[in-house]
Image 1: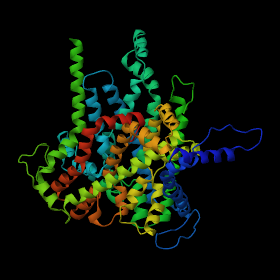
Image 2: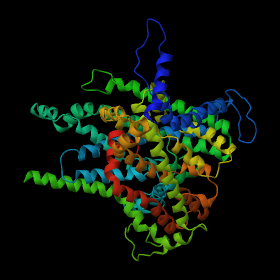
Image 3: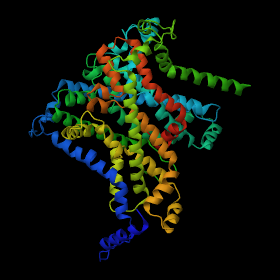
Image 4: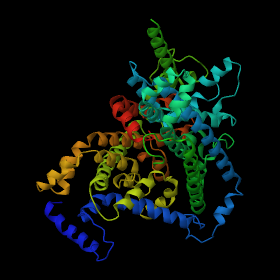
Length: 323
Length: 278
């Protein structure tokens, strides 16, 4: 793209924009064609791989599509069926319990480690990196296999608990504990939110702590009244991100429990059931409807989080409700 | 004196916590040198008599295909993903950050919205399209999105990076007669190197770890990347050869661990500035 070829687009833009009228907007010369050229890979992607599929998927969710026969319109039947589908209800329950446990536990652990690491100390960079490490591999098949192995009957965790007289028969095979094992796997990946918390903690002005100390505020009080409110935007960001991610856990759950959520449906995550319906028995209409219910669910939770955020997220410096 | 004491206590505390966090990695590394029957049933961490038999079995081929084949497949997918993602994301980011064109604000909004979109809404129609194009069981469905800047995180990351570069740089180049391509290629890209490296590293690791895409699209074991090969291995042996399973898991983790050791600065900085999910 040379300089000379740009000039005509600019003229074109000015010409189309230069409508006569009182509310004529003043526009700087644009880059027209060049903009779309640079954007073209993304534009093709958004049309063919995102927006197109979204529309198609919405359509399929109202059909009985099974990959081999032409789809028949069945209206809201798929959506209605979900509420009488025991496995669907189970998958909603499993996912809800997982999100409700994994997100707060992981975030609390991440915040605790971040507060511990915060401050100028030798080796802080090393520790930060070391705690972050598991985040990179935690979602992989390899780690899920290792995790399942460590929590299986007679393995290291079982042996350890037996010493304390607790016999669970291995968490991996015990429906009462299998989900907790995945919650622990999520918690193990506390590094990513921890790094974000650390960035937030660095922004808290030291004077605030000094002033509070002069006023006789103890450590707990300082954490509760200064640290938490000051990092609440970061906390909210982490909460949002982790919640959305937790809804979509797949790999670890699949490796641990397979397409049926073994043992006894205790790890039948929403995504696992969706996969099983769509690609196990090719009920793609139903799976599409499930995907839209998931989008709706995640959307509602996101809106809910944003609503509550007004009450507890503070943006210092900026005038009120930015973002 | 008291300060030294708190400092020592702090280090001891952090190291103890770190030991717990890193224990699973040490555990699997040690397990790969144990005979299968010694992996469970004992609290002993290190093998009594280290053996290489697990690795030998994995390399000679546990499902009839040597592990190097899966390694190669994973590497091909990861490298192509990196090339595609870096190129397409940088192009899109330059347009969003520096060029003025109709609909830019709306398109940027759509890009941000896709950050939060669960990809499950897309997989079924995408699969149907690729199936109709006869591209199932090829790498095309796994790579198409990479070359079309579908990972909005990286577009956003690079946009943020370009925005904080002084505009005078490209303005003065333009006055000297440079076109958009020249500005992009000779001025913006070199200055964006940190953001591009972060993009490259994360893309490599995510692609290396990706399980869902290959699970849906690939059906010929010869084409499997490591994560899918691991699952295949479990299915074929019903997970009974613990030693080989641990060795293969370890081999799948090692490249990511090495990447982490070499590039941890970029990774940690990338997360703390953009909130990548890691």
